[in-house]
Image 1 (cartoon, one colour):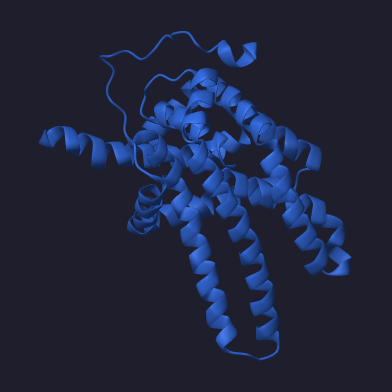
Image 2 (cartoon, helix red, strand yellow):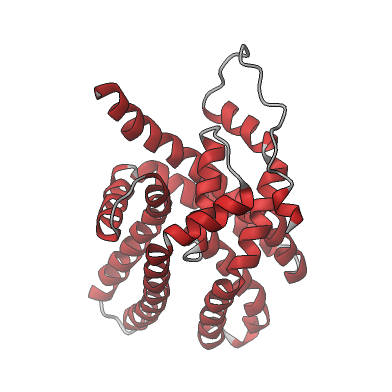
Length: 271
């Protein structure tokens, strides 16, 4: 574990008199300044998430084996890895995601974080919420796959209503995905119950719809096209070292600074 504890020391920091960067310029500076810590966080998160990622992969590969045409079934393993990577990035993997998001949140807000101790402490503090989210994730994933299969079959049989049902299920699935950008951020920032955290995440998933949609499309497109040309061994290596954080950090950079600006700073201004 020494690899993860070596970061527990002060770095050179940033010149306090330097011009304050914003937006994409600040994000780029933070990403490269925190690149080594991000690699460490990514490795820690990947290793602790392996059981959940295995469950995601088992569900997906079994579905692909049953629905893919015979001539493309040979690509089922690689496609299942790509889809597992996307779900892991966008949804997380339950309890350990809180600790992981806490560290990314602090990086985004230019605040200090102890990689190993904060990771496990925050994961333990929000364990109940993490387990609840994980169980919901597995259930929703299975139900959505089943619904898509049913509706696509009905559409092929000429049932027009199935087109609207399919569209509705995809929209609900997307909103559920957007909620994950806020659930863990809210859980490590405010002391709210599970129900209130879910409610606030649902509201913010709607309220920030354009940004949520853009970030989701970005992660899906970049991950799919990057991994589509790579062998499975290299996909796993990238997932181990950097890919999860590289794809998730833009989301948490946006969400962490949004929550701080709209809720924390406004609250301090009114006190």
